[in-house]
Structure formats: C-alpha cells, structure tokens
Image (tube, rainbow, N blue to C red; front, side, top):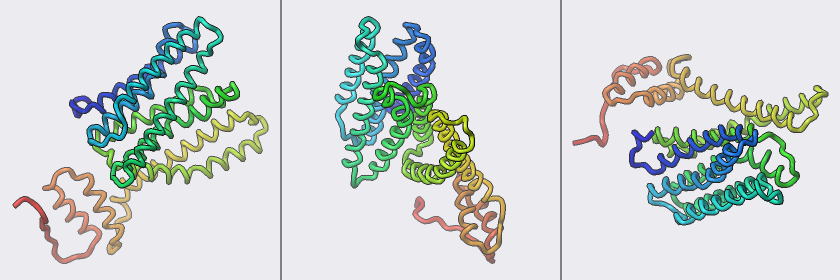
Length: 312
C-alpha cells in the first residue's frame, strides 16, 4: 500500500486505522479479563479510532482540494478523546465514575460529530461530483457503526443491558477500512456510488427471506424465545443472503461471457464483449479479442478497426 501510494497521506492514515482496529480487537480479550495494561490499551485505542477515521477523511478530500471542515476540528476531537481517556483512567480509582459509560458515551458523541460533518459535506457538495463520495463515506461509516451502536452502545447506556455482545457487534468495523483500502489501492473510489446502490439493492432483496425464516423459527421452535438469539439468527441469515447474491452476480459476470453463446442475440453479445474488454489491459490485444468475440455471436462479412481521437 505504501509502495503504491508513497506520498498519499490518506493511505498512511488508513493503514494506521486498520492496525489500530486490529490491536483494539486483540486487547479487548485482555480488557475482559480485567488486566490493567489490556484495559488501558483498549480504552485508549477505542477512543482514538473515530478521530483517526475523521483524519483519513480530511486528508483524502484535502488531496482532492475539496475540504469543507477545518483541520482543527480533527485535532479538537483528538484532544476531547484524550481527555475522556484520562477520565476513564480515573474511574479505576473513583467508583462513582463508570468506565463503560465514559467509553460508550464518548464513542456515541464521536459518531454524531462525524456523521454531522459528513452530512454537512453532502450539502456543501450538492452540485459537485464529490457528493457521491461523501454520501458513500457517510453510508459506510453508518453501516459499520450501526450494529455496535444499536445493539450494544445505546442499550447499555439506556437500559444497562446489551442486546448483542460487543465481541460480535464490533466485527462490523472491519468492513469500513477494508473497503476503503481496496478502493484506494485499485483507484476505484469513483465507483463508490455504484457499489452503494448495488449493496442497497442486495440488502433489500435479502431482508424479506431473513425476516421470514426468523419468524418461522420463532413460531415453531419453542426454545427460541430470547430476543438476542432471534436477532443473531436474523443477522446471520441476512448476511448469508447478501453474500449469496454477491456470489451470484460475480459468477454471472464471469461465466456469462463464456456460456450460452447465441447468434443474433445482440444485447447479450454486447454485454459479453464489454465484460471481456474490461479484462484486457493492453490496447494491442483488444483487436484480436474483440474480433474473436464478435465472430462467435454476431454475423458479419467483414470487420475493421479505426481509432478516434488518438495521437496524431
């Protein structure tokens, strides 16, 4: 990653974000065992993660010369989270301060600030192409944080009891940096809006089957009465459905260019040719490949190639 983007600050911050998430997840086991060093490490990294993500957003849009918030906001968030980290350390000495409430409240405030800034950015870029990228970042951070906030953070703060354990809900945070890491490495961040629309479509298709199976399970399996168990079952089926739809789409794109070749079926032929062209990296190889694909599906007497707008 650093070799591909040696001068890209956003890539460097994103790598740090990935490393911090991994360390945070590993140190969570030590924190659960009440090991002092593990708890302090987990608390510090957990609180700094939202600020690091906002730092990544700032550097990415700074590279595009389209930043809508000041850098001092990022450093202010670092300072606020460091202050809350000190407060969480004091909770070890003063029993009147709840360590969990400090961490969860601070994280929730961080998420509200980040989502508010991204919402402001979407309005700021209302007539700019960058609005799709801002919308994608908003959607990605919201989707990654939603399981933890809805099923652990807010329930613990409001009713003092979680719906799903933190060890399960925090796994969704790995989705966010992994997606951005892939998009930056492959220069496909401009396709973010298309990827979001694709995901929303698959998510809506997967919703009804997951709900139906969970409902039938709750009705006919009498032991399944716990809300946490039903929620976990619903999420498991929901994720599996989405993965199956993504797999189907991948195999359709891969195999449809090779199977079911029909003469005079022009719409399908154009689709196959377009998919094959995407895999061709060199201009010289596109001519024979295009001729071979066309010959297998379209009837014609002669063929030729011309270049429009090339070098003179």
